[in-house]
Length: 470
Image (cartoon, rainbow, N blue to C red):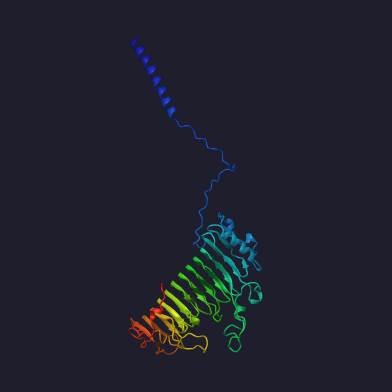
């Protein structure tokens, strides 16, 4: 009897225990959360949204924008561009620009295997940050003055105005069709007599950036400009990389890259061949760095001309390194007009290879385009210029080193080190020219340079009147 009683008590206890455990679990279970009905009845996408492309990356998307998930790529064909090299695609480019300008990281896209002809156009801002103008095909100007629309400016073709954080890049070609402009009778060396003929001589600059900042120009082949190829006016923050600029050796006024009133510039890893200056630095430029550039053939790398019509000009903090100048009329040149004021200061030329170059190292403060220039007292003050590791060969028609400084405003603090220049052909020219130039040689130069004066000049004018504030 006792065993039956104990078994009955144990059985009742286990039933109560199991019931209490199930009750506890049921009591603590969280109720299901009911989501509100979606306002859009379409099912949610299972594909995560794409990451936005980086505007500074030259090629952040495939050549066919139809394959790209980005909504920020505006193919000019979608705006009516034909791309056969005959049709006028200007309206399509303007419409695509307007659309790309209005969105952040917008891309105006001209695909490969198409040739787009457009007339003179100003692509103006302000635009949303990160705008990219990518040319993988060919962008072409009208073929000469006869094909240029009468209502269009003959001073410029493509203008980029009031922009910030804009990139012009691609794997394509920008073609200027400059030959008929070069053959105008008003151009130098084109008339039968060898002299230019008076008359209208406007010719368009190919690409101009005006009053813009934080610009990138990379990857493109820019060729046969009617006049300057690429020009920056009133800009700040410019990066140029892996650019190719080309025009025939005798094409007049076809400077490669020109800077005016522009600061904080880097020009890297680029090839330039043309009929005028490889890189020209005009008034108001500062903090310019050039590295890894080949100029062949050109008129060299020029600071100036400066001080024309008695104007004030200031250039400071320019560095040119690790570059090559070949088959050129000039090498490293500073050219100023008499009568100007201002200064050129803080210039460094380091590790430059010359090959068959006239006027390898040249300061000319008597620059003049005719025989009618009058001597004047005032001049640009040239100070603190360093030439290091300038080596190679020169054309013996002119001395490889030429310092012609103002009678009243001497050139000062010129430094030369490891200068080794030998004749490309012919005999060694042993008469470098110096006039009122002061500085020092850290090593002996080849050819020998005995005309550079030591110390400081007896100042004829107050140099503080010529110095520029940074």
